Length: 77
Image 1 (cartoon, rainbow, N blue to C red):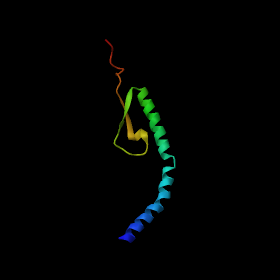
Image 2 (cartoon, helix red, strand yellow; image 1 turned 30 degrees about the horizontal axis):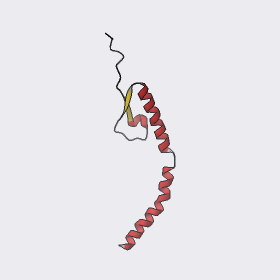
Image 3 (cartoon, one colour; image 1 turned 90 degrees about the horizontal axis):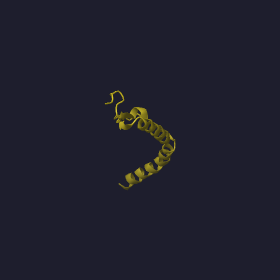
Image 4 (spheres, rainbow, N blue to C red; image 1 turned 180 degrees about the vertical axis):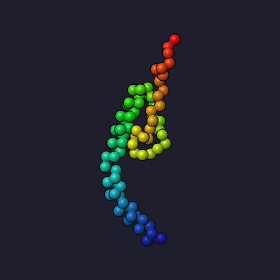
């Protein structure tokens, strides 16, 4: 049992540099920047972002803009 625990510990330590390398690629920053831009455009249209249920890594596919403002085609009183 002690040998198995030390093997797991060694494998975890060996994987840490790989995990750190993935975290520093800037992918998350690009995704967040694109998401922020999408949210800004959606908010300007009086909408809110809602999830589509997909996880593609592309905010324009992962989220949709649900317009919550007044419809412009309805004639006024």
